[in-house]
Image 1: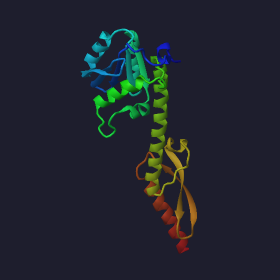
Image 2 (image 1 turned 90 degrees about the horizontal axis):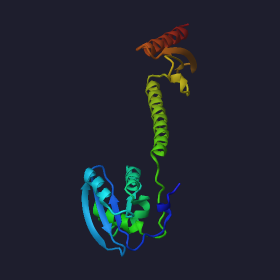
Image 3 (image 1 turned 120 degrees about the vertical axis):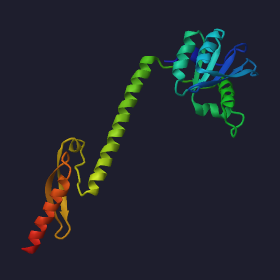
Image 4 (image 1 turned 30 degrees about the vertical axis):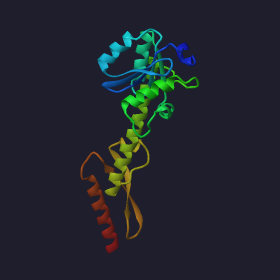
Length: 219
């Protein structure tokens, strides 16, 4: 749900708009007056940026791109009585004066200019609980993707040794799996059971299958 400050239109003429290019350590800030003129540019480290936020007049607009850490700083702005505004990076790009000369200072000015557009779409600020739930989902989806990648890698490596494992998740979690060794001479499929927890069991089963094939060809 968007806050009342987020749903307001263009900032009042007398309101200062600060565009902030977020980073891990050094933040680039560009303060713009109501008429759009740049008042000041500065680069602040993380601790200094937190102090600078607390010194801004109440009601000042602090615009940021909706990137990593943006919701945290938006909540800090709300605690100081400021008006945070988050925007998608794709909406800020057209307001960068030089598309070829991309740097932190130009980005901060473009963020401040974009935030003053009356038809700009802002991102709703998430609470800590909302971000925690999203983090759970992202971690879970990451585990699912990693598990699938690892299982496919294992199947590929086992296939190089002539072991074909069933296409189920359970087949890789049991130590003994039933596989099929193919005999090229008579095109028969010989079922065998391979213990994946015992090194060398694949070679033993393979040699046993070849010995059976040899005895059959001799007879």
